[in-house]
Length: 401
Image 1 (cartoon, helix red, strand yellow):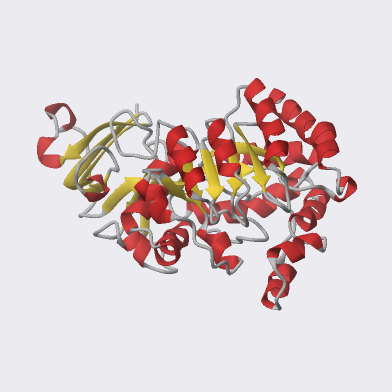
Image 2 (image 1 turned 45 degrees about the vertical axis):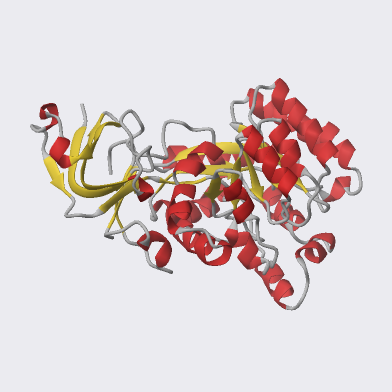
């Protein structure tokens, strides 16, 4: 039996507490067998826990373990040259239509073995873990053929075996068209994407189904074909939507009860209303906004007005968001999107858990998983305020260091 009693801490619980951040000062947390057994003000600690060995945190801050709910950390190669091209004036669409973008990563990923993909991904994953992340979403979508998509998701599952992090996988076969199917999107969906989804689901590799609904990718009608198959397989869906234009992707996603719609810079009020009705989470990705030097801000005020939950994620990928820091993402969410520090931190904990359909984590409450982060700070706003500084003191994963 594993037991820990953490005392003398500030607790950003993000639970149903009226204080900002769900903050409890002078708090204590009892951990037993990988779960939170009790949490609250230390003065209210029940006698049953008083005999446990105490670990005095000297006033440090405890939050839920961070959750990165949108990443593409498994891929081959890099796209540093495209970074140069964009600085020379090329747009994201121009790079993609010239054979760069996602397709260039497809070439490198297809050429990489499972071992090579794992070796390349682990440094990125380690950087995230070092910032207190305990749950990580990983997408496929850089294979665009059956063999490579399978290899990507096997690699994602392997990461959860070789590192102390919980991995959730998303099948992203509808990410882009491979060169051999250029201008034949429907044929690609029939011959590759949907068949790959069935195979990968059969192999137990898929937790959710994603797609890229955009002019340079797939139309809403094409995405709906993938979503229908996901529904047949009883898999939840999510969607890259309204990043470069408003095609109604968020409304489509909401009609399928999507876990989330992500990016959303061009989201209109109808899309916001649809997300509010479905309970889907709006996942904002400031790393891509920053890297692509976008100027169209996501409609944060509208999302707030309609009480749509907002999550933040790194979107760690080789092209549009080569970002492996969720702490920097929090700062970007505040600085670029004018989110509050409380919204930003909730977006990387409570709302990120919702975006993955996980109800057993994301807040500090009795019965939740004992995935915690202990920070050498006195107030939660410091986690969004600092730039390029990691104040993590200890990460607790399943009740253990």
